[in-house]
Length: 595
Image 1 (cartoon, helix red, strand yellow):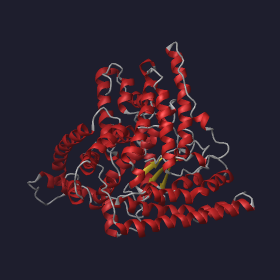
Image 2 (tube, rainbow, N blue to C red):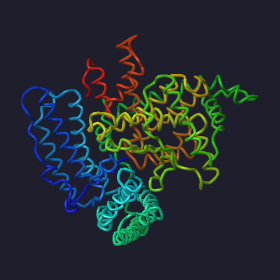
Image 3 (spheres, helix red, strand yellow):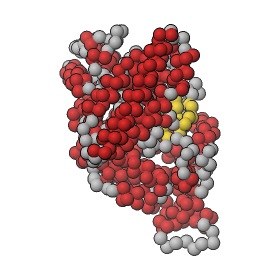
């Protein structure tokens, strides 16, 4: 998840692009389609320059490091400045006849248009800057600069030093912004800022000590680090001692109207939120039917000497419980993830599923402290389009320190079977592979304004595609556990809708996940946590997966014997992280226009 904070104009430092350069107008060239596209290509670059100017932290995450030294102070004045800039962008874009652009540029135009609408929605309607204290944490931005390899250490430390000048203003603005936050996001902010403090500990201080900075520079930076720690601790105390005791909280539920609008802007699907919800309910029943058939065949093998229950769901549950007993140890969990990567690489190569790039490193690491606490046990941190040679990190949350019962519950959920599916999803050929392709896309817009549903949908599609290729031996065991895993995706969409647009309680949610999803207690509780802290994102998996699989089937039907799976994958991924409905228009030009 990207937090796109906004930078006050007064915070600009010498050497930044001028406001005139950022806000220069654009008049499209009249003439041939080629000249119109060329003019729009030039405008896209100006749009991106403006985007980075106003969103320096996002720029750093994308690998554009010109603004690393700038810290965004999220003040009311800055929100007004950004709103005015977006209004100028919209006016400029209206001068382009979108229907006359190439198909690729039409897609970029719509992504840019959607970004502007989305930014307005977040600022003016959703207003999460007001109720989500976890939006404010300088730890992640500084850690990214410190751990980067794109500039020499001294240059990165100078950027950090300059960024930290405004830490007090940053957190003061955060306090001023907060009005009736949610209890859940307040607790998240406390956990993540406590984790963020670790960024300003021994590793950073050691880097300062061994650097080539002058004595005066070292002294300034050391002082700013100390001030940052004190400021963050003050923010944590403010949340713990003033916000929480006051008890003036709003609900974490955003309600149907905001949910539907956020779904349309974030997901950019051909389907509405209600349509996806109904599709998920139907797919849940399809999965249950398949699980019952496979579990009936497996029951004698895994539950010997016991008569098969009359209740078919009890049969499924018993077989899953038996299979879930096969798992890594708590101490060996991160290592088990790391050891599987070469196997996945070989399978994709040997079965000609798509071309991989061995020059792009994937590093399995323990999730950094400042990223923990949101309920997501695994994630990928990929380099942006400007940082294509940088490492991609597969973040895995270790289990040390967890009570034995909690760790066992987690490991049963991520057992020998489902851990493989998780690794396919997060790494190969899921998120890691897709993001490598996305960084090759000639369209920076598609890389920068990447669609979450396409990204998550590809990872879910990759799970099924790998099993369809024979991965896992085509056994009932592997397919049953995939059914269970895919049920998670399906229930994610159902849970997201019922929690954020409805009134589902925690007990009801856990019961749904455990009974219909056969999930472990720890996994169900973590999913409830995610459902309270996020909105719409849990729906992205099922939505994107459904659209990708439908597109593949439509192309297979259209092309018949000429259909080539590898070619489909590589063409699909070549468009960057665009919404599936737009990729479908480019791959199926005869199809009806997406809504």
